[in-house]
Length: 140
Ligand SMILES: [Zn+2]
View 1 (tube, protein in one colour):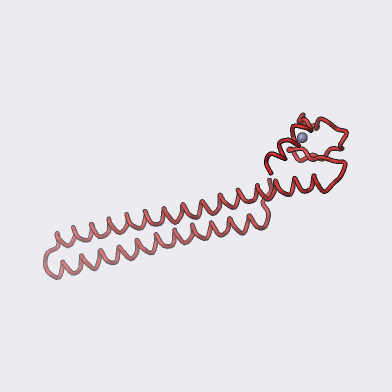
View 2 (tube, helix red, strand yellow):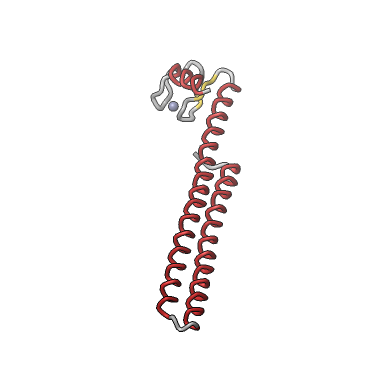
């Protein structure tokens, strides 16, 4: 199934959310690194280098952990938006297929996409006409 413009736009929205997640992660890690360095410098001035180093590592570790968790959640949201776009696309595609079948008298459209005349009881793909029409009416 080919993508349509609505699907492309929706998927782009998902990609934007994922991009925001990545930017957030990078910026947060930079910021947390600066805080770690600031803490280290403070304790070096106080002549307590090892305590400073320990605190800097804790700040860095907690900051990176937080950034990764939040970024992962935002990325998941982006993936969901993209999946929803695909799902909505197949719904639109299905609706169009059914409508096209209804709009043309004397023909029926198989699930494979082929258009058949009414007197054709079996599509070239092997599907039975009654079977297809029954399936379409159930889906609606
Ligand atoms: Zn067919």
